[in-house]
Length: 109
Image (cartoon, rainbow, N blue to C red; front, side, top):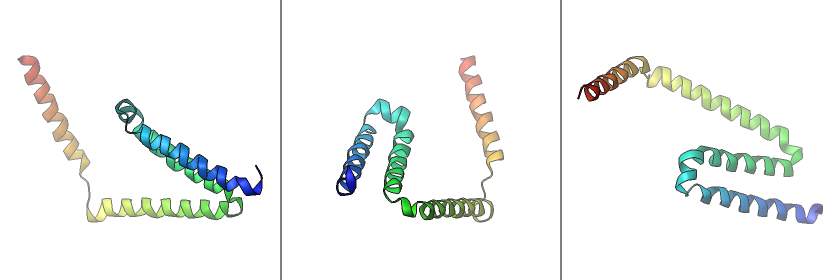
């Protein structure tokens, strides 16, 4: 398409496919099955399209994304273990035993 029309094509395709994927999430059957997949498609398509357009900054962008993922993961682990620990083992045990008791009561009836 040439240097003049490439930004127009990238912008139009981002707009059309992004809006189609966004509005497809409002359809109940798609929302029930593919809501997260549509969201990831929008984010991935946008990232790849813009990154492909700016090839000279691709490695810088990849390094920034990896560093933000590492920082986010580290913060989640630190907060989950020190500030607000999750006692999933005991909670899961109580939840499972409660559900099994309800199931046994309904089968007895």
